[in-house]
Length: 213
Image (cartoon, rainbow, N blue to C red; front, side, top):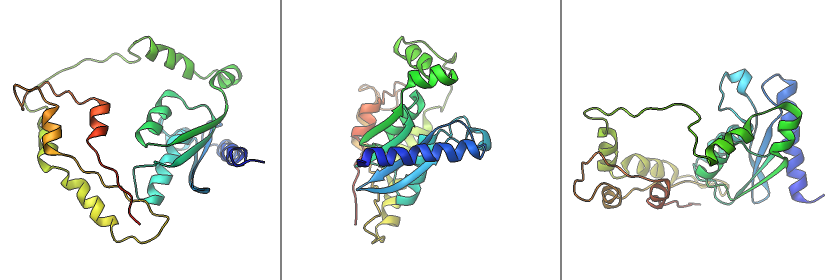
């Protein structure tokens, strides 16, 4: 049995554990780094009354908590079923390096009638899954300006708190944000303009992730 199959079976075992405990749907996940399981989880939507508590999200939270980092670069996520749109986004935000799944989205839809594929189709077509409206008011951008002006102080504190950890299994994240880089994402004619254009690619490019041992 190769390692992919072995870890996928662990993910399926997580799914069994969850459904037999009445925690939620039949979805399990394990996250592996350098051959070691660093996070695991199964669907806990029912027991937590949390629609976001999918197996992949629970496993990501577990791995990040164990390793004291929000950056799962170098990790492989094994899941019993193809990730839904929400989990795909969470996997991308966590910088997971690779995903391996067993059941396809179509198979889960055929067996249980889940609506994952319908969500993906709607997103591809640019449809708004939930009606939304934009309302602006004086001061609505102030949290962004305050965060910008802190110049990464919050996350430098995170870095400092992890610098003393000597365990080789610990991966600490350094989350540094540049004042000039963030300011440059504002409308060039007015640094306090309401036209804050902070795309995901721009946002991610302004963060430095470092590992310490």
